[in-house]
Image (tube, rainbow, N blue to C red; front, side, top):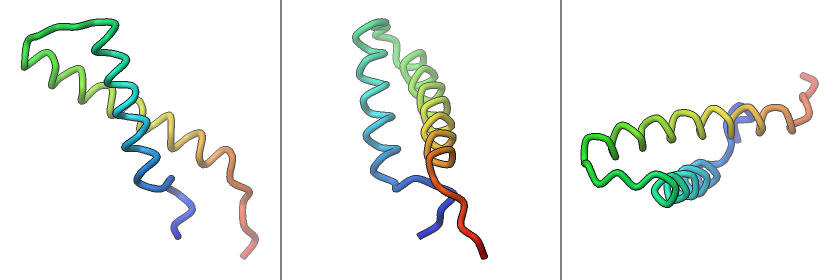
Length: 62
């Protein structure tokens, strides 16, 4: 497994949870706004998950 990325399901769960929380806090109802907000949430969550995953993995000696 590639040690640079978390498993795909971690991204899916984190993005889905963050997007659901965003919809509860800021319900827009506009399709374009929802799509843009989802994209922003997905990017931010993906970066945060990747940073946390890489920070918690011990570097392997080659």
